[in-house]
Length: 215
Ligand code: AP5
Ligand code: MG
Image 1 (tube, rainbow, N blue to C red):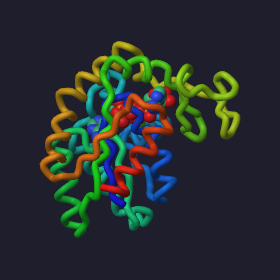
Image 2: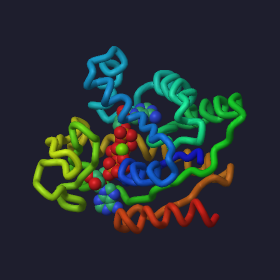
Image 3: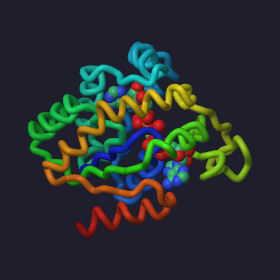
Image 4: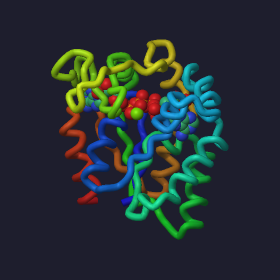
């Protein structure tokens, strides 16, 4: 299964991705996560990406595209992959198409999680993430059993540097201007699966699986 997850910041891409990749046994490729782990390790790529991410802006296409191209050649992509947060511009989508066709591969579906801007800010600001395993929580909508502590491994939770109101608002605008046009791009290719992102986490997951398997 070769899938893309599309949707604005805070729509629930990462949350759904964790469950989808378990079900289909495919790797979760999140460009945001790749940048954050490079920032943590202090790599040159991390330093470069941080300047853009902290402002809520996109990292330049050529940087992102070369990372994804390389990642798709790893052995664990043999049965497919789930791209989360890539592509994010029409340029990136065209580069992905070219790369996949040179590998003799095609996308199966593009899952588009829809949610209105009004709920996105509250979701992003309340997000907390495990320092060790990356599990995602929300202080109100999906709280851990013990405040500030991961249910899986007992590690502490942190807040992303770009999850402050002003930066989230910029990220939403960037999404509307640069990423939303991809919905039409993939609609024309008859790949879009629209999913209502305002329902519960479990209902959204069930709707995604039903959409993937019955359409
Ligand atoms: P990235 O990490 O991809 O961030 P994003 O797209 O802004 O999306 P988020 O991760 O914020 O949201 P999500 O949809 O994953 O939501 P989540 O499931 O966590 O990118 C970060 C930055 O990296 C970009 O700004 C850019 O600078 C750079 N970058 C990355 N990719 C790039 C690319 N391709 N090109 C250029 N630059 C790139 O959920 C959010 C919260 O809501 C959580 O707390 C969760 O628990 C809660 N929640 C989830 N679902 C529900 C629900 N159904 N009901 C209630 N609460 C829910
Ligand atoms: Mg995410």
